[in-house]
Amino acid sequence: MEKEINQFDTLTGSEKLGSAKFILFLLAVTAISIWVITQMGMGGALGLITLPFILLYFYWLFRKPITGLWAAVILGFVLLGLSRYIDSDLQIGLGMDIVLILTYVAFLIKHFYDKGIWKPAKKDVTLLAAIWLGYSILEFFNPEARSQAAWFSGMRGISLYMMLVIPLVLLFIDNLKKVDFFFTIWGVLSVLASLKGIMQITLGPDPWEQIWLSTSAGQTHIIWGQLRAFSFMTDAGQFGANQAYSAVVALIVAFADKRKGRRLFFLLVAALGFTGMFLSGTRGAISVPLAGFAFFFILRKSGTMMISGTVLLLFVFVFFKFTYIGQNNSFIRRMRTAFNPNDPSLQVRLQNQKKLSVYLSTRPFGGGIGHAGAKAKVYLPNAFLSNIATDSWYVLIWAEQGIVGLVLHLFILFYILIKGSYRIMFRIRDPILKMKMAALASGMMGIMAASYGNAVLGTMPTSILIYTSMALMLNTEKLDIPKT
Image: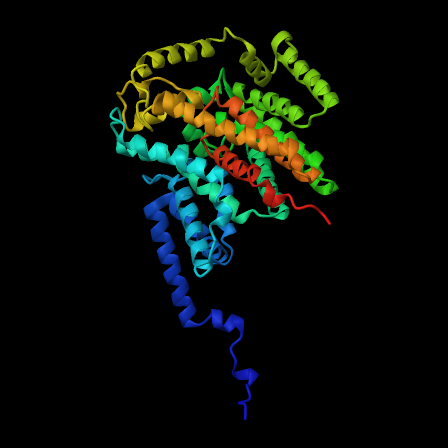
């Protein structure tokens, strides 16, 4: 016979909260929290706030490992910018490594007894990523290299993330619903990034950003008294190029999606993306929409679209090159200098490239990964390469990995872009998928063009988005399922 429960003998929720055990637990948590905050400052406070979410994340990660891929996309937008708020000697960028590796661990545990789990990842794009990573590992033995720490720091952004992200995309994103979810996450993060940039221009930077601007960063982010928006990304250059990239992709996706709500959402993403591009004052970012849309018109194989698109792009070119309309606006005025071949900044870059060409003429494998540009000063402050600004992503690859590395890198990029474009133009049957893949290819073309002026391709969040796009474009046979 079941024992009857006397409701009067049962403690209520409020009574349980007033128990001695709960009060002792609360006091212990409070004491530990105060100690963590006093010892670790802002970083400790953020850690305590995020702890419940981290525990929930681990729960979902091991239930659905794709959660790790979505987390990587989100972290790509915010991770490096967090260094302004967290005073720590740790490399905050290692958070991306941890998330990606844990995603593989969760995937292996979930499919421990399954056979053939890696089959979806066995593609040429994975092989190319492995070759590029292999070359980067061999660069560890470059006789010109002087710092193992510099190699480790640089190699991760150049090739490791590419090798980690591409197989995950091939394993997890296997239907159009997941492709749409990827676009949604990207769009939401892009909107938030643009809104943050607008806040910086209209309301001013917050106290932590102001401290960051008081360092050497202020020299490139405050031009003639005008702040260049950088949002929660590494710098204004990455913010401007990435927002232009997001705008190009979102605008094309908006016309691909037949659902009114999603179409309006992506139009908003595009509008705010272009706004962020201008507020960043990043001159090279203008090449993203110019090259991206020009490539899109080619992919569409429509004579009418190519003609009308060419006219539109010529109009934009003429506006910046041959007119002074909007010259009183500092952002338009700065963007216009990108079309001036005599711009002093461009001349300095060309002079630096001449110096590098002499140095690299006898070094076909470059000076070592992590050994060139401003970031290398952390490890090698007096080295030749670390005191010459590379600016361009391709110049950085050339300086660090030599002409051999640059040729290999360009081959990989163009192989993926050309093969993906061929599939878009001649193989994909689903017209909506065709447009969405064209959006990714056009965005990639735009970033490749912009990377000549700025080192944007290998920096988060652009790098994570590009690697995801590469995998999706070369996995269309899996996604292109004809409707019955």
